[in-house]
Image (cartoon, rainbow, N blue to C red; front, side):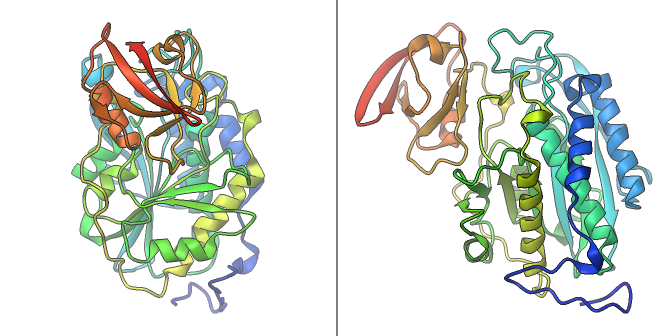
Length: 407
C-alpha cells in the first residue's frame, strides 16, 4: 500500500483501524443535513434556485476537502439539459452534477455518489402527500443523508494520510427524482474513462438506520466478491440484507448498465418518504455514522485486489419514474425479500388508499401482469392510463384478495 507520509497504517479486514485519528464525524453529518434539508433550500427541486444553493454548498465542501474539479472545463459542475414532468413532457431546464476527484495515482477509480435533488415544492407529481402542491419537501433522508455521506467520505479519504490503491470520484447527481437524469448524463458523457472505474457505491436514503430492520445493500450480485464480503461484515448491530440485482430506482442503475459493479446502500422506507415531513430531526445520525464506517470497511477490504470483475444480474432493463403516467400512492418496501411488492405505506386519498390497500399488503398482480418485485411493479405501471380501473391482486396475511384500483 502506498503512503502519503512515512506513517504506516495497518488495515485489518475484521476491524478497520482509523488512521491518524481520522474518523467519520457525526457533527459534520448533522451540519450537512441541517443545511441541505432546511426550508431555505426549498426542497432542492431539479433546476430550481434551491437546488442551485445546494450545488454551491456541495462545491464549497469539495473545495474545503481539496478535491480536484472533475466536471466541465476544470470546474466541479457538469451541466445538462432536462425536461420535467412525466415522460419528460414538462418544462425544459438546465441542471448540473457536482463532481470532485482524489488522485492517488492509481490505475482505477472508485465512484461514490448520491443524488442531491429532491421534490422541491411538490408540484412534479412525485409526492406521496395527499395535498402536496407548494409544500416544501425538504428530503432530509431522501437524499440529504446520502449527500452528507458523500461529503464526509470525501473529507475522510482526502485527510486519512493513506494513498489508497484506487482514486476516488465523488459525484452528487441532479435529476434523480425525474428519472435518473444526472447519472444517465454522466455515464453517457463521462469526465473519466468508464473503463477505469473499478466500482460504484451509491448512497440513497441512508439516514434512518434501525437495528431491527437492518441495512439493505443492493447490487451484491454484480461482482463475485460482494456477497461473501457483506456476509462477513454483517453483525448483530448491523444486519446486512443483500439484494443481488444491479438495477433499481436509483443512480447506481446507470453504472450497472455500463457493466460496472455497484452497491446501493439504503436504510429502509418510512412513512415520511416523498412527503414534506421528511425532516432532519428524524435522522438517526449515529446510525449514519455506522453506515459510513461500514462503507469504509467495504472499500478497504478490496484494497489489495485488482479491478473487480463484473457480473450481470437479473436483467439489464430498468424503468425510471418517467416511464409511467399513473401512481398507486404507495410506499414500496425496497428491502423486502418476499415475492411480490410489499407495501410499507399508503398515502391517504390516492388510488391504493381508496381501493382499500393496507400497509403490509403484498401486491402480486396488477391486471394481467404478475408482480414479483419492485422492478416488475414499475414496469406494470407503465401499461396503464389515468382514469383506468384495474383489478389488483394482493396477499394480506394468509388471504389473497382482489381490489379494484382506479388510477
